[in-house]
Length: 161
Image (cartoon, rainbow, N blue to C red; front, side):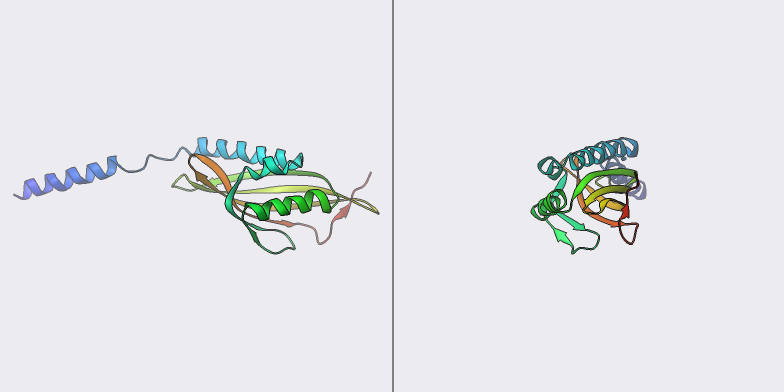
């Protein structure tokens, strides 16, 4: 009787292990994330708001430097419109420093550096900062779920020519 019980327990354990989630291919997920990050940065650099929005989760949350928290793709669209049309933004670039992929394979975070040049009446100013992005995977595609960014400088610096 005890032998049968052990066999049943062992069989059930093997079934549970076999039905468990497949191991996450961290290298493949990191490669996919980097491609998405570079693509959204390219859209932002081109000031292509509609293309950039395709990388955001519908309920995305943003904590911009020196501004209130916003949530939702419509709010992200308005933030892009503000930066692209109202700030004197002349150039933008974002560069990923790396990703950490969660054990489940459907959440990750990215750190990176951004550079923005703004035209002002007294000349161009450069603002260098950093960002932390949280990505979530939905139906096999990575989307930005949350973003926080801030400047490294107390005030933008004049661009020397």
